[in-house]
Image (cartoon, rainbow, N blue to C red):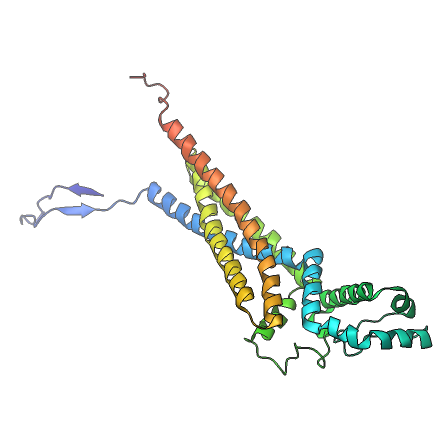
Length: 295
């Protein structure tokens, strides 16, 4: 912005006062685009952290481990085995070719006579839970029969504890995981493009600091939020009076380590870039300019 001296108009009138001319140079637009790119990068990284955590949670190994624990808590399999184990063995002895099922167990799991007769009670329990987890991972919550389960849609509300459990476990499916993998790859590509654009818009070693600042702006709040959620789940599990609530909050507490781990790694990367860019920029500023004698 520059101030120019007033000039007398052609009509001979006296100038009324100074006037100002505002000049917007290339640096203004460059900085504006750099800030906009940094904000977009931060938001894209936040979305990437969410998608990455869900993709890791819905992967076959972690998802089935979570489903096994959930099935054990939701179906009361120990009570059902206490009541129907001997009856199941008797059916296996009477008809060795029939497909056998544990009475009142809410997931359609078939057993053969050899498995029922050869496996111990604990081994049979593990087999039923494993097959239930596999069905839930393939079919979702539709694998639960409405009778004999705590997750019937007629019995629970959407915002109740059981409703939250039903909706959360329904995400642990292979087709959901496939969709999340595509989302992670897409968001990673967007973040890479924005990071390159931010580097091109910067100058010198400040480019590293700019990318590091955007990464930290996304990762640190996400880390704080994930830690807060895990702490809240721990309090809920310690204070919960119902067995189901305690068990499910403990499962959620363990799952919360996934976003915490991801955000710690991204925070470390952002801090490293920010510190490296800042230190190198300060070092470069202290170096003598080429062609200028050192004072």
